[in-house]
Length: 246
Image 1: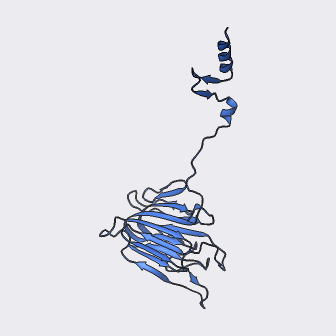
Image 2: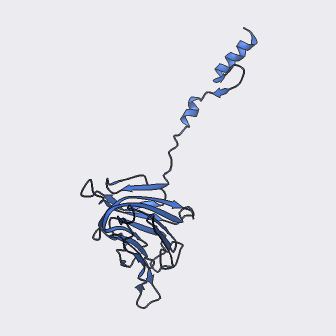
Image 3: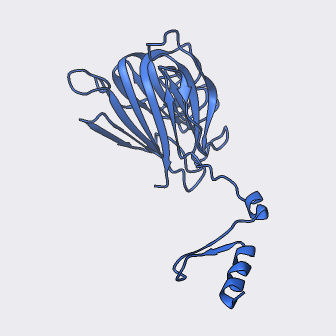
């Protein structure tokens, strides 16, 4: 046996294959190595909720169900309901972008609230001083201020801004709405018009004082208000939420 054959035999025993000319090499994976290999599962970075089918994708960090998604009364209607909780207490979760599609919205279809008991028009079950709201009622969008704790008695700052016929107005847009929420700021874009509301009266997400406890959460009522389904609506069909660091 010549030296070349001996070397080749040794290489094969070591689990190494070499192409002629030494151009490419590959190492065999031992059974021990295989035991340490784990499948890499992508971590979700956004969530999508289908309110027609009553289905949702996996939840990313910072998103939980405050009230679980419930099935609607019809397979064709966009009438499933639920409340998502968004937690902003992370450098990677400074701004939430919420993309929505609507079909003939009616009633309370979207409700973003700083308090778990907000129910529209500044209503809150005394759970937060910082209880700002933003909601879609019918085809109107409304921005509502938090409590004015300097007033005696304490009252809400009230309506900060509103725009009628902003959502799914067949004459002007196709029923899409993009909302951005971050500390003391909210925006809305229907594809043709853009609303930017920058005010200390809005969402308090940077550790602002609150006599009921500092809160870094915003709740999203889908086809209902956050506090309960007693104020509800139909026509919000799909929602996707993604966090950004700025």
